[in-house]
Image (tube, rainbow, N blue to C red; front, side):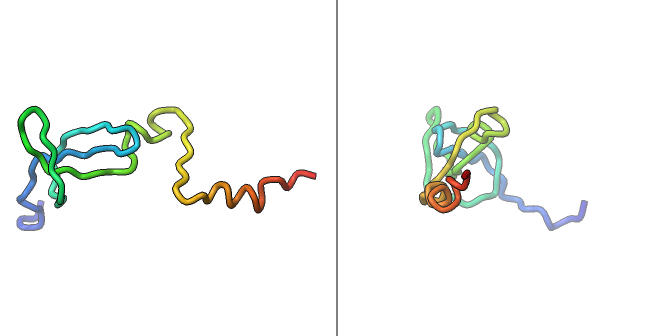
Amino acid sequence: MKKGIHPENYRPVVFKDMSNDDVFITRSTISAKETIEIDGVEYPLVKVEISNTSHPFYTGKSKLVDTAGRVDKFMSRYGNRKK
């Protein structure tokens, strides 16, 4: 491996899945503005929209995520094309 190209500031960071409130701790260099306390230890907190605990590929469940009404807009335009 080349020397001097890898970051030195790895530390434990908490990632929180906002769709199901699952949290997990891993080492990362990502910067975080928020913190969370787990088992009496304060960690940086990074909020994620989807993780392996909520992604349909890993869970086997089909889940429709629609934040801006795009599916309804599509269905109103093209949904009832059967004649």
